[in-house]
Length: 400
Image (cartoon, rainbow, N blue to C red; front, side, top):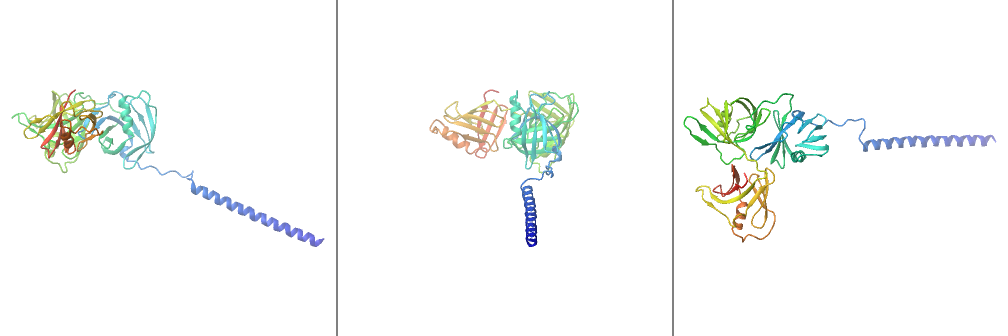
């Protein structure tokens, strides 16, 4: 009996030890499962790394307008008197908030090679066409540039730009509305001799451009460099502080930059802007840049750049296009649909394949548009150069 009791106690001890071992093994297995789960999931107590945001971006910005980068043509926002419209505030934590033409928006953004909208929250109710254009552009940013208190967001493959200025709590200066916008230098004038010389180079559409903003800032380009600054107006007197480098200026670039910083008076007559310097002895004469959207252009013919002779192309009334944006147009040849893009060089694309080369001068037209080199505009004329600029296709606007 005593032996049985001892055997029973021993067996009981062995069972207890086994149970303890299983419990310990269960604890280890449980710990391992927890460790595996933590490796596969982010630690809830670990904060995400703060996004790398350029310091210059942080703050509030106001959209001044849309810029066509091929020639710095500027389209001011229609709701310029709306203080909160087209404003956006970027915070350090990667969030933003702001307003479109009619709605409040918020979301998240990232900055790597460019600015990317990661999340956009807000309704599109009652959004104006301009507002829809703004929202679409904000989702298509391909490049970002800072110039002091100016922010440039490029979209549409950098063919267009959203131009912002830093929003400050101050009253906007009183500036004549006719000055606001984009101007292109035509040349240099002398009031004493009445001499006038065109600026070189003549075929650079973006060179020597100025954009006057409503907040007293301006931006533009010389022969080679991006420029920015401020201006102050008192009646017909104007003082311009133009910043930027003179490095690698070509042609009339150096003379232009030097003259702009000496400007003291302005006048606008017949859509021409004259900026006087050297005590009024000399002036820079500018023309307004053309807004293309909605305009229709028809081919006048092929022009010999040396003699000025125009050769019309048959059939008459074909080879036209109408701009659907500031850089893109749709039109037709004889029987085909044609797309035009004001890139550098300009690009004509025949989108359909109807055999019309035997119609009139269609074959000649198709050969020419494959060799275009550059373009310029002059009031109601667009010139598309080819054959080392010895010839050009002359288009005239039919509804300016």
